[in-house]
Amino acid sequence: MRDGELNLVLPLPQESAVLAVREMDMPGTAMAQAVDTTNLATLGPEVAIDGYACPATLDADNGGVRTAIIGYSPQALRTWDPFTGALVAETALGGAEDVRDAMAIAAWPARSTTTVFVFGEFTPNWYGWRAHDLRTGQKAEHLGTDDYGWFIQEARVQAVADFLVLPAQTTRFDERWSEVVHDGRLDVFRLPEGTLCGSLDHHAPAHFSTAVVGGRPLLAAQDGVYGLPGLEKVASLPHSCFSGPCTLGEFGGDGVVIGQSPGSPQALAVWTLDTPERSLGEIPVPWVGPTYDLALTEGGTLFAATQSGLYAVPVADMCRSPGPGSASPSKAHDPSTPGH
Image 1: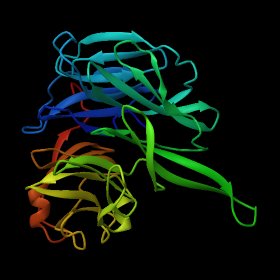
Image 2 (image 1 turned 90 degrees about the vertical axis):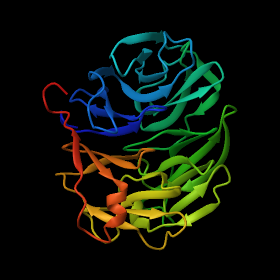
Image 3 (image 1 turned 45 degrees about the horizontal axis):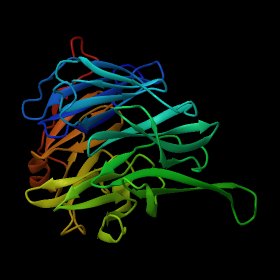
C-alpha cells in the first residue's frame, strides 16, 4: 500500500467514533486515528503502530482508559488511548516466536482481561491463528490452530458476541491431478473454549462482516446472512454483494447489509434482512480507486476506507435513492493531508 491509502475503518466500541487505519510503505507498520462519526472531526493524533491495530473495550484497571487501540507486533502487545495518542501499556509476548507475518488481529473482552487474536503466517505459506492475554502477553494454549493451507493473500478476523470468525483454506488437486485448487472458507469458533462450531464456504477472506442484530450474532458472507453458531441462513443476497468489502448492522430498527451493487461496479447498495430480494437503494462512489473497507455506525452512517481517504455516507440518503443519484458522500478524513 502507498502512503496515504486508508485500509481499515473500525467502529470504536461505546464511542461515537471510528478508528481509521492506514498501512505505511514499511510492511507491518500502520497509522491509526479516531474520527468523530457526528461531525467527522479527528478526535486525536495519528498513532504509529509497529504492527497491526484494532479497537478494544478494556476493563476498569487500565489507567482509566476504557476504549483503546491495541497494537500487535511479534515482540509485544501495546495499548494506546485513541483520544490522546498516549501509550498506556506495553506487554512482552510470551510464546509468540512462531509468528512470522501477522495479517489481521481482533480483540475480545472477557471477564477481567482482553484476548487478542492474531491471524497470519507461521511457517512459509502456512497460515493459522493464535490468542494472547492482553494483560500478561501469554499465549492461550487452548486457542488457535496452524493447519489453514497456503497462499492466503488477505485476511480479516472478527470477534462478535461469543464467537470468532476468521478465514481458512484447504489446498488440494483437482479431479485430474493437474491443478492445485484452493478451497476457501470461514471458520466459526466458540469463545472462550475455542471449539469449532462450523464452517462456511467463502472465497474472499476479507469480504465478510459480523454484527449483533436484534440481539442475535450474525455473519454476512458468500451469498447471504447466517446465524451464529449454527450458520443457518437468515437471508439470501446477491453473490456480487461480497465481491468487495461489505458491512452488516442495524438501521431504523432493521438489520441491513451494505455491499457492492449488482447493477454497477461503481456503486454500493443497501439491503434489509426482511426484504433481501431487492435493494433499498444505491449510491455511486465518488472516490478514486478501490474501496478497502466499510463500517456502519449505530447512528446510521456508512464509512468507507478508500484509496483516497475516509468518506461518510448517510444510509438514509442511500435508501432514498432508487439508483445512482442524489446522495453526496462527505470526505471525512484524508490520511495524506498534513496534520491529520
